[in-house]
Amino acid sequence: MASVTLLAAAGEVGGDFFKERDVGDLCQAQPDHVFCFDWARENIDRFGTPTVQHLQIVIPAIVIGFVVAFALALLAHRTRWLQPPLLAATGVLYTIPSIAFFFLLLPVTGLGRDTAIIVLAAYTLQIIYRNTILGLDNVPASVKDAARGMGLTQRQILWKVELPLAVPEIIAGLRVAVVSTIAIATLAVLISAGGLGTQMYGSNLTFPTSIIMAAAIVMLMALAIDALLLLVQRLTTPWRRAAQS
Amino acid sequence: MSDDQASSVRYEEATKLYRGSSEPAVDHLSLEVPAGEICVLVGPSGCGKTTAMRMVNRTVEISEGDVFIGDHSIRDREPAQLRREIGYVIQQIGLFPHRTISQNIGAVPQLLGWEKDRIRARSAELLELIGLDPELGDRYPSQLSGGQQQRVGVARALAADPLVMLMDEPFGAIDPINRERLQNEFLRLQAEIQKTVLFVTHDIDEAIKMGDRIAVMREGGRVEQYATPAELLMAPATEFVEDFVGADRALKRLALMRVSDINLWEAPLAHVGQATAEVRAKLDAADVEVPFPLLVDGERRPLGWLSERDLGADVVPGRPDSPLGPVLELDDVMRDALADLLQHETQYAPVVDRRGKIVGVLSVEIISEFLASPEAKTDEHPAVERPHG
Image 1 (cartoon, rainbow over the protein chains, first blue to last red):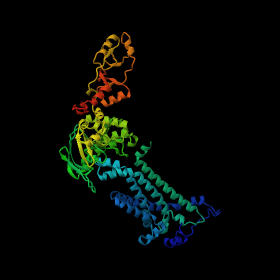
Image 2 (cartoon, rainbow over the protein chains, first blue to last red):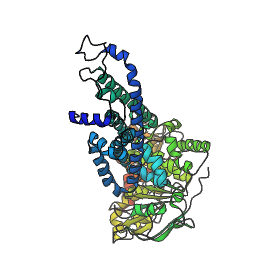
Image 3 (cartoon, rainbow over the protein chains, first blue to last red):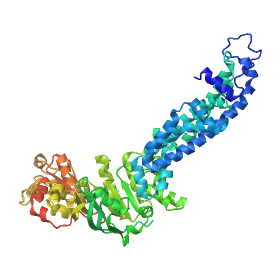
Image 4 (cartoon, rainbow over the protein chains, first blue to last red):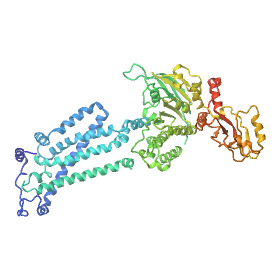
């Protein structure tokens, strides 16, 4: 996906990630190894810090993205004419190629984690915003009518009726956002923000073991957070399971 | 609980003009619903009946005029506070899908800040009142049938013991059989709780059944006639009302009568073991309209009709030749009684009192004579006693 030129350019700005990595003697006997278990066992420690860094990028990005998108959705829910422009604006952000986005921000926010967090948060806006609006719109009109007729205030209708009923859609959006954010965060290496990308782009491309391990950790991380969100959804929407039984 | 509180509702020149519309949806509406009565707003779609109803809880804001609950103008009240004192039932029910049945019923009490225990007790009490198993309280709405959900909708509206109930086509989405059941249940409930109810429907039959008073409305939000069901059927004020009530309004009057409201035929009675000659003599008497004797037991409870063959014996046999057929009760609604006769393809049937004792015979002939008589059109006879009237 990234061109050689770009990698080289990133190498200049991004520091020393692109140096040939020491493969060690462990797998020298079989140079065309796809995955070298011995090396993996020996070098598992290398992945600790990048994993922590990865989470330090991903979690703030998702939290910030969620807070902003959620606030925008609530605003657009109350002020309906804001919906199309907000959808367009978050949509435009979403279409900016990620590498371009990183480098475009460099002059403003510089190298490092902050830039990565801003870019990744911007990418989550579209999906979280759209799903929150969708969830709120899916609340049956009759339920809102009954709530209003019973004497709930607008605020009570939002927090006690509409949002609880929109939880499944909101979490569905969050889950998609989490998986894509964790994946794109591997590019943070390009702006010296660390993360599991360091174990991919910095590797000797003829020795893919490190790339495979980093990718596996990325995937496990995505699955784990996804499972956590699914659990949250189950705990907050017991009425949905009742409907199915 | 203090379910005996209810307030009158009074519209004074209430008008609703929607923005961008030149014609008002409700036009200078003035009517008063006495406390504890059911007032049905009925009319074709677009006549403003729902708008008129929604004025009361300010889910529709009045453009001109006023509505009073008791002596208090609704304009003086903060809408959300006002609505908590007014029960609200809608056709689509609108139960909260994410709340249990008990939580749904307890919604308004919770808004009013009742203690948890009091809310729980009230939910249980209302579940019982509407005839639902208390165990259903922990279920979610999606686990209940449509009829059960609508009962819960009514219970939820009653939870905080409102002064007034607004019901917008509450049984409109229920299948005909369950609708009838829910209507009857609500009338029974209303006899107990005696709320002031504004009930919206487009179905004149439902209006006649449910209403103590009926306001027939037409396009443009005008009331054509505001009267009791019997008055409406007997003396439609305008051509519109006459058309709306329908050509079969004489038949509809039957829905307002009970079997006890009409003069029955006397039944020639026979007892087991009685001499048939004696029975035959009764039949030959001039004023007997029923062609066969009715066999009754010692308590005067009907057993069956005697046939010519039965009368051929010397004494009345213990087992009559012809089956008894339908047995009607004095309390039966006349329309149902007629339906019973027609369904059994019979011309007449015995009528019994509450203890099952024979009081007379109702025939299709009696009913058709009544419908043809001037009495059917002019009778000021109070129609069926309302459950609470």
